[in-house]
Amino acid sequence: MPHVEIRALPGNMRPRILGLLKALSSQPRPDSSKPMDTLKLGVELPSSIELYRIRIESWRVVYVVEEELQLLTVLTVRKRPPYQYDNLRELLSDAIASEEE
Image (cartoon, rainbow, N blue to C red; front, top):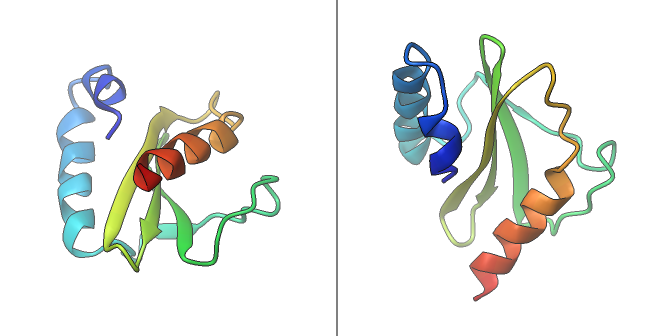
């Protein structure tokens, strides 16, 4: 989990994001989540990994779900704009590499 990003959130947003992260542990695909089009983003993922985002006001929580491993990994919590998912490929490769270890 991106601890530094969560600590840097504005005080009013921090509890909302933390509550969302707790809720994701029991329901990783809530109605408010949207699957991300990895091909449009130029990222190819194994079929066992799903990429999602959830919007809370102008903030985005981007995460992956690996059903086989029953694992949810939060990649980033960022304000949009200006965040445009530019480093998504790097975040995904870091997450996938750490899971393979």
